[in-house]
Length: 233
Image (cartoon, rainbow, N blue to C red; front, side, top):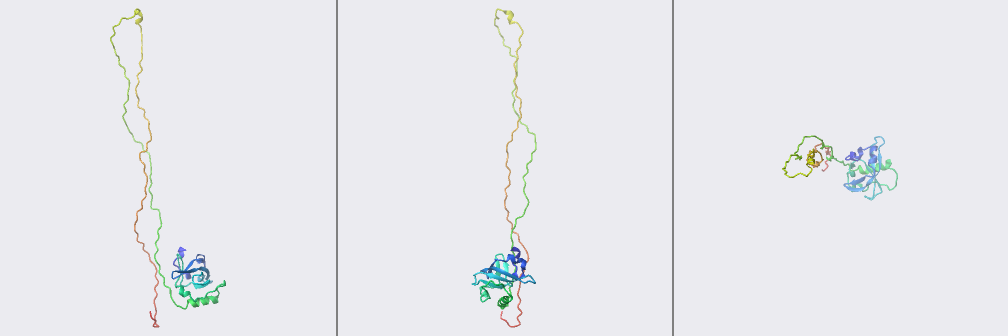
């Protein structure tokens, strides 16, 4: 009903009727019932009369002219209080509102000759919208690195030791060719890689609050009195 909020129901048409049914009805802020049947002019298709159902003012069915009633978010608000409904024509039967009954209704509520003045009030809401984004992107780059490592390598040297010992009896056997081989070992650098987690990068959100002044124009009705009859004001 938000698109109808603030509208006098006398300005509504038969297309708006489904949104009016069963709405609470308030007289000077006091809930007195809910919207029942709704009648509209067949020529203009504008809402003319609203049936009120409820026990709030001690009746089963009551009819109110559409003029002077305004839709708000919580329901239908009348321009007068409970006392104005006292003595208003009402019927306990389920018959439709005919011309004779409507004439009685208009006669009752048309006697006061009052005018309802309306004003628009600025209503400001809030809605969320996209305000950009923050993106984390990870990429890989290669860079040269170096490190030092100590490597061992076996070396060989000739060691001579004087010997002065007699040889066994078979001196011929002491002479001959002989060859020995001594293996040498050396360490080599072996390169390997391992993956190590170094840092965790995340995003935290915070909220900044700012105050914004909203400016618009609202309508306000004024009532001028042409007093040529000496009425007291």
